[in-house]
Figure (cartoon, rainbow over the protein chains, first blue to last red):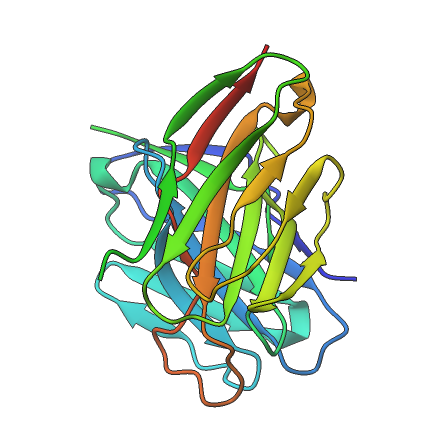
Length: 114
Length: 118
């Protein structure tokens, strides 16, 4: 069975703090993809990153970084020096070899206070 | 490209009414899906299609019908609306990927339809 768990329901930080959003997944597939999406208050889903199961390199994009560890089935997302504009709900998702089915976690609401 | 479009943006129904949520994409994607988003539950897959004429059920298909007569369109039908179907509905599309996926390939989502059933 495919499952994504985001145990942190809501996190509040003060601007410029670093924050890590946790994502743990379960799958029996040997090839799979992991994703992070951002949902700002306006409601649209914004794609942030995709990771392939066969590539465990961590990735950094500006203030965002992702730590993928197959050994612990985790795909965590860190925002460095958070900003008010980072306030949103963040979803972690899992798909198999083909992109026809995505399994989403329940989301983590991030509140960044000035 | 308009991407994935959904209509309407908002809808209020009475229990028992039927309606169709429209979804269209202009990216020539093979795969299209419908999700519902409920508070605290993330997005859950309702139905999906891997190409014109081919559909299948997702996690929560009861009360919904779909069909895919063209590559571009994937409407979602509520046959007899119930209050439990109050939700935000997202349509999504993607290519059929495998190892050839580029780093930015993903499933693209429409803006959503907020449905309230009274």
